[in-house]
Length: 87
Image (cartoon, rainbow, N blue to C red; front, side):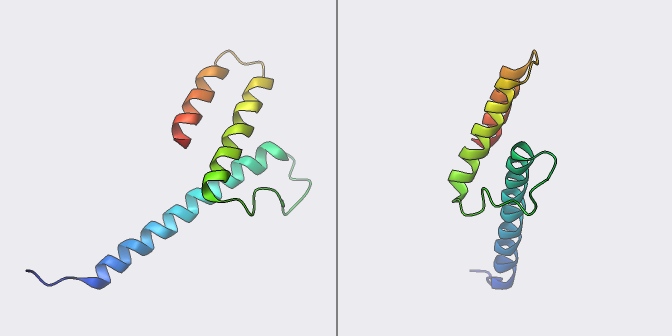
């Protein structure tokens, strides 16, 4: 069996954690932008204490609700695309 590079494994795990946290933050930013596009209440207090699953579901709902209120022709396509991204 070849030598196992534990440091390389830990590096990859660290890279995954950082990437995951970045993506989680971007979803939170999307939700905050929908909630308060003018950023009049900063820092935002919503969406902070949600689990990852609840965060994704909450932002997906906010996005789809927003698409329902906008008068754009491809709202359904946008909702489908965003829901696919969340999934």
